[in-house]
Image (cartoon, rainbow, N blue to C red; front, side):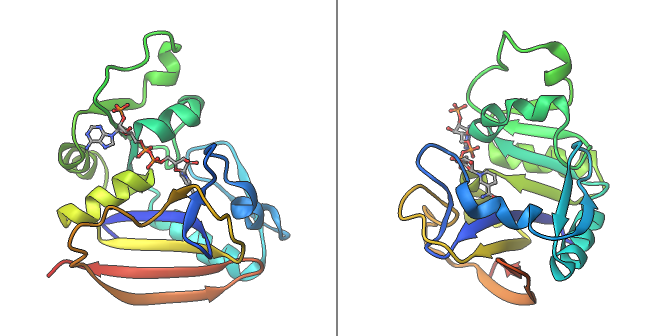
Length: 199
Ligand SMILES: NC(=O)c1ccc[n+]([C@@H]2O[C@H](COP(=O)([O-])OP(=O)(O)OC[C@H]3O[C@@H](n4cnc5c(N)ncnc54)[C@H](OP(=O)(O)O)[C@@H]3O)[C@@H](O)[C@H]2O)c1
């Protein structure tokens, strides 16, 4: 069981988004092949190269009964995925603020708002099969610092963004150790998967 997993598409220079939060070419590989892989929970189909299809399908299978934790910016940037968060299970938003008052009730229905990362992860573990998908790099960083992250996935895209939102920063003493479990060479992307050990 993968446990608490962070998975992001990242540029060679370490960014997961541009300063305006757009992902530019980082998601191109999701539609660059001819093998269809349906997203779990959200109504979207990826079309990827064969090597990526196997990797992505295995990942989506592993989170099929998971819950999901994201930060407030990702939640607002995606408009709460229109009320259908990835994974299709329970979803938890870490935020200092109350839910948006002017959103339709069905957009908000799957989400529980939590005041800190630790309680969000704990509740998410209890809500699904114990597997938790983490979205929002700041939440992933806090999970690393709190010793709560079990797996780091990087879909490494060979471009430089130059500036923007980093996957890895604010990492305190950086005591975590990473064990490589998988490397897959796709087309326009290299998939990296590490088990995290917190000494
Ligand atoms: N490349 C990819 O695969 C990928 C995937 C997903 C997202 N992204 C990118 O990731 C970016 C957003 O991620 P982000 O890390 O900047 O933001 P985020 O984690 O989504 O949200 C940060 C916000 O969450 C709340 N928060 C975070 N930690 C908290 C805590 N400990 N206690 C209470 N509230 C807390 C705060 O909001 P409040 O104080 O306002 O409540 C904070 O401003 C976007 O640019 C998006 O495009 C990229």
